[in-house]
Image (cartoon, rainbow, N blue to C red; front, side, top):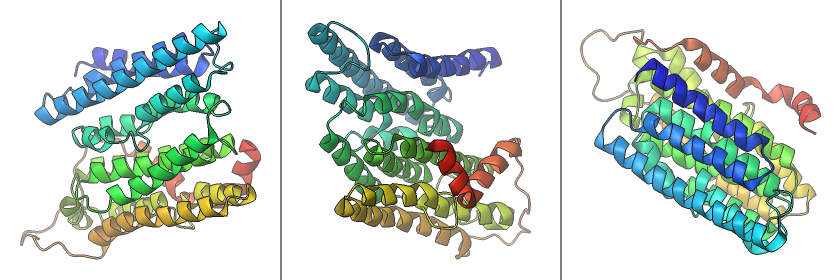
Length: 348
């Protein structure tokens, strides 16, 4: 892609998200979401592969549907209350419709069906943008809307997402689909705690972004898109294989890695809110996700791939990718747990 075109598209992505962050008016927020969607579409279809074009079409249709629902709901609210302000969502129908539309935008269950299919058709870097940056603008709106939304709706969306995100990834062999289901499960953790402690939602979103970035950049460095490919990475880059296994366990939420911190604090907060049953279901749903991360770790580090060649294995993977983002995201994805008290001081 032409670097000038790429610069325009990436700056439009930034502009769309910033516009949504800064707006308190529904029309401006909607405009930001639309700029965001239109900027990522050429990035998704840049390889002209049938799968990429199919994924782009699916993504465009779901995002357009969600944007139309947001527009309809905010117009309904403005018609009833006489103003477009986000903080005045007194109409329960409009607020419920907007939460459902935003859930469709970020891929919460049961509106998650597009997410694995779309991510599977993209290259790893565009998939990384879709899994991290594209979640920010809708999440900003969901956080602003949380107090007006029905608590039962948020709890249902959260629990369904963690359960479906866990179940869906169990029988996958494609790494991008596994990361898509992982994303759905993490979104569920963020939504479930939103009405009780929005700062924990932001903390979970931040840690999720770093862990997912580390996972995608590692797969990009080793050119792996299937579990079979992942099984042969150890001979090319043993250190990268070790850190990848740890990043996957961090995504699963195992101590003493960073991924344990948001899950631990969310379960603690749910227990404080006198919701032991919800906390138990969430903890058990996390085990489902942990199973498929362990499956990936097993394939990478505990098995020797049957189709090894007799030639001398290359010990360094040839790559033009800058190693700084990968190093930084991996370090954050593995080592933030001891800083939990300091982070809590910042977010509370």
